[in-house]
Amino acid sequence: DWNPGNVIAEQVERIRAQVGSARVISALSGGVDSAVSTALVQEAVGDQLTAVFVDHGLLRQGEREQVQQDYVAATGVRLITVDAADIFLDALAGVTDPEEKRKIIGREFIRAFEQAERDLIAEAAADGEPIKFLVQGTLYPDVVESGGGTGTANIKSHHNVGGLPEDLQFELVEPLRTLFKDEVRAIGRELGLPEPIVARQPFPGPGLGIRIVGEVTRDRLDLLREADAIVRAELTAAGLDAAIWQCPVVLLADVRSVGVQGDGRTYGHPIVLRPVSSEDAMTADWTRVPYDVLAKISNRITNEVKDVNRVVLDVTSKPPGTIEWE
Ligand code: XMP
Image 1: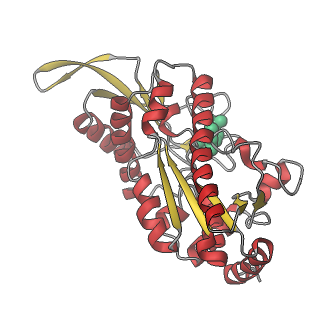
Image 2: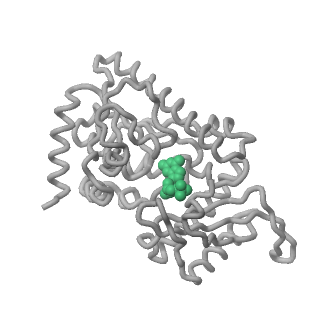
Image 3: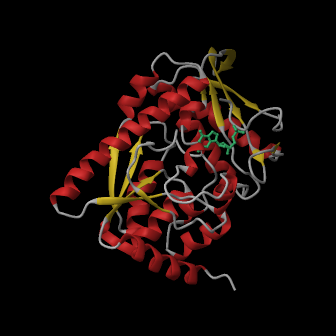
């Protein structure tokens, strides 16, 4: 019988045997895979592990706190947060092309991670135990998808923010390599990780940066973050989290439409709701969210979020539409 407790015990043994007394680093993204693989390594080698979280300023409301407070409280991991919002926003200034945005975000992520890495390597060298290992949350389907290679290849790069540096001289620790997503969630629960982390829906590495159609600015991010928080709260309150794969909330920052509010004319931006149902994100259908839930979301967004005067629903399947707008 498959049992999360047994898998944890077995992996803890393996990790200890692999790592010995060397130090280990792990990049936490806020997603399930990196959270569970990091927690497993933490369980195995404790303070030999340092987790690095890059705050690129493109996070959703509460995401940073979830990692810094809830995740740390549950695991006791030594965490370094890299504050890189200003750097990312400067690099994204004036950029509207989706692929260019993705490239910039990937590049800056690597730079931020490398900086943290250099600091840690210096520290580790000073106390005599070098960093030799890097944790990756590679799952079984990722291994299969990439041809089953082992060792040092950067298998998950297509899922991460542009991937980690290619010239990293670390050996990988991949405690989830034989597991499927639902098994990973079961292990996360057994390790005591908070439910909002364990049950988290997919969220793209480039974050809200690819959910603003147009230039990414601090004001636009604040606005989108508010709208996104309302949508998530209302979908959760309606009990729809399990029925929905994910619901991107997109700001059409370069579009304005005329509206009326109180006794004044408005000229604001539309917010797009993109609720999708899917098995594997390769294909998807738009989710038939009940009208009363949509009505509540629309009312709240137009009342509460400044400069948004219209909410529209994306009713396109994938294909032909992708899940994300960029
Ligand atoms: P698309 O838009 O291609 O998205 O239909 C399919 C799934 O992948 C997620 N996605 C990403 N995830 N980094 C990620 O970690 C990315 O750059 C990225 N782009 C899209 C998307 O949210 C959906 O679940």
